[in-house]
Image 1 (cartoon, rainbow, N blue to C red):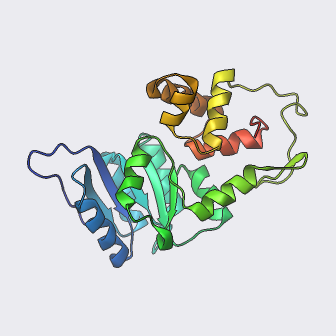
Image 2 (cartoon, helix red, strand yellow; image 1 turned 180 degrees about the vertical axis):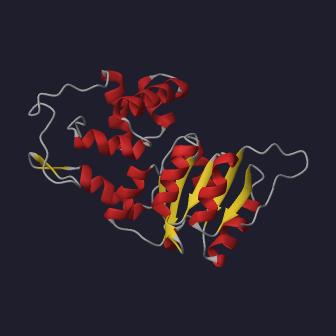
Length: 238
């Protein structure tokens, strides 16, 4: 484990970050990117799942960047552990592994963003700020997979777990209020917290309060997870 306390003299550190990455070249790239932004502070790096699981809890970082292909375990397990011991941490998977299965498993584990290493945005730090602001950065190729899975096909809705009944067929009433349903539908379409607030003429804080209620009612761990669970239950009208 390598620890690096950052933050220049007189600069207020806004976002604390841990990196779970075993590839030295990728770790160095993240380190150099983060060092260019005085609003970001790298507090620890871990090169193995074991080190991350043992130490990340007390750190309670704002953001965790997690690789999936770790030498001694699964990055999914690291994501689940962080979500359990530090619920307020925003988790972004940064991996060479794409594909539908990895995307949805990461979402189900508690990831709030997913970027592919071979297509990282030029301004990687902006993605971290967006994540911390309540958005869910996803590489375009993966976002398309997500949208294709949520898009109705005729009268049937394709879903990862196979055929499902709609809420009406199941005789199931939505646990969400009308406003919460509207917000969740906007999230599924890719709208940010600020955009939702503007369209509904409410403050971003009010939107975030509704989002927290959505998480609680659906037992979701992230925005993507909430969309996925709602789609599984036939609660979204897209």
